Length: 425
Image 1 (cartoon, rainbow, N blue to C red):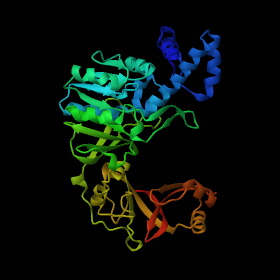
Image 2 (tube, rainbow, N blue to C red):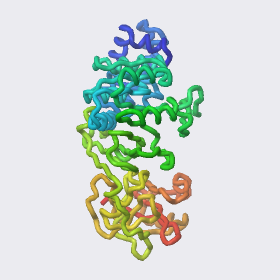
Image 3 (cartoon, helix red, strand yellow):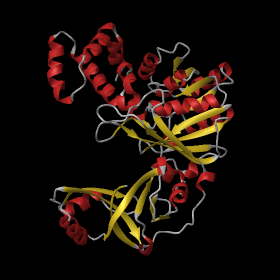
Image 4 (cartoon, helix red, strand yellow):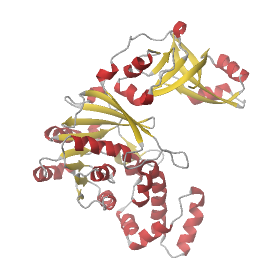
């Protein structure tokens, strides 16, 4: 979105047009465009409004009903923190004793809104003028908050003098301006050196602040974690969504930790309810002492248990699969991947998901195809973590035509690959 489109959308005419639009439906977009132009709206305003309507519909999964009043850009929405996770960031900084936070790279203001809702005064910084204007709109209900436009490198000295006791928060841009992927989206970077604001500056400001946090890619390498930090790997509804680094008084447990967030409510369409209050989620925080290594024994074919457990991705990424192993008295198929077998069914809460093992089939195309056809399977869900195999290619090779659905888990067992046939326990 350019500055002209943002200005047009925020005008009285733009707001009136957005408020009049029906729920977004891609199938009706062309016809709706024609009707709106016939009513006298400019093509540019119509295009901007329909794009914003589409983004708001997509944003409901992150922001719940609040998405209907917010403004977004495609890249900013993709990086924006979900409201329940933003609420956890705010709680962490509030617990550190902070009453004010400097958000050094706020985007459209997802975390800044979470901080403001939690009662923190917010000074937000955004380098892009158009995105900063959207953030100001999104923060309108919180008069104690403000958005500064400019580079953090230029503004940081003055902000440190103005708010010496403030906590700092960073969500560095992880996309490269002007470089697009094949779908037209700004290309993502996984290099710390390519982040904006500059990663060295982020570390310096964080280390000097009473408390600080930084949201990074969940693929953050353990070797890149700065000393004296807590590295918290966070999953939401089963998806690994971020690695959060904490400094100073915001640290609860040094080293790596895992936080598992699962929504407890569902909307009428069955999707997760992203209630901005954070009250609609269950939480599990796992630390190293709670996840001491179990026996360390790997599963063998001879001791394949009656149940299969799939560790939450936050556990595997943080290296804390031991929490699940201890909970079920289990054995891993391959160390560190979070696929566990055990003899008994155990309530593991948020640590992962449990399945009953129905069969184990050698992972050979002809053998597996024969097994699946015998069981009239036509829809196959394939789970894999440590088996280097293209699941879609395997599905094509199997040429399934049956009427039943089945789930298989590909594992390494006694040095050979096998397909475990499972069902939810």
